[in-house]
Length: 308
Ligand code: ATP
Image (cartoon, rainbow, N blue to C red; front, side):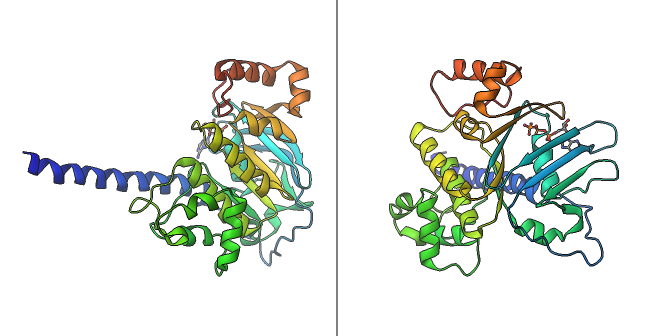
């Protein structure tokens, strides 16, 4: 029986590995490759980003023409600033990121999304997406070297560039501790990386891509204090000199954002700095209080499902 059990057990772990990588791939596709009806207009010019200022101007959107995902949303992400989106599940946070990445085009009467004053429907999708770096919740790793996995952010990157990105993303020390350093195979068939490490690989990739605009979908899973600090530092390095929109779950990210948008049922119900929103003593303040109370000092806590 023991002889049989060994191979069966192995088969089980192969199955789990395949299953897990499918789940990861599905998550990436969800954010990056949703089937799109979006077509470029004839002779559309490329987007030229100068400051990276983003504006949502009275944006309303429905996926199915019956339920409203966003309703009259207006806000600006000023040049080089960070905007955090918070709100309950279904409030419309992901929809904002998807619209900016142009998975869907706004129809007549649904408002406008502008980058540097240019309507994103009027430029090529390719140039728009080149200007945007995405750090998803769960990054997909290829079953190959960590060097390839980081260099993927910009094909043709030199070893020096890859190492500089890994340093900035707080991953270099971890990588040099691997048996073959940067040549170490990672993923299901190699060194398994934790969620926090995978996120830092995504940050390193995005540093290499060097886009003026960032979309971040923060992981909801709890991180230990050191990992939390490393990720915050990596994100600070990444966000420097770029405009960013984050779906924020961590108190530390929320507290350091320049502007917080509180979404509820597809509308912005409050917006301001962390200090301003606490002083307002409304929806955000009660989410914050309930989360900081239950977190008892743990900074890696989700405000995602907080009931205002
Ligand atoms: P979560 O934190 O759970 O990811 P969210 O704040 O990101 O939620 P959205 O995903 O933007 O919320 O959803 C906003 C609304 O749009 C919800 O009512 C949701 O059910 C609906 N919705 C989202 N994606 C689709 C879709 N692909 N088709 C139809 N409805 C959708």
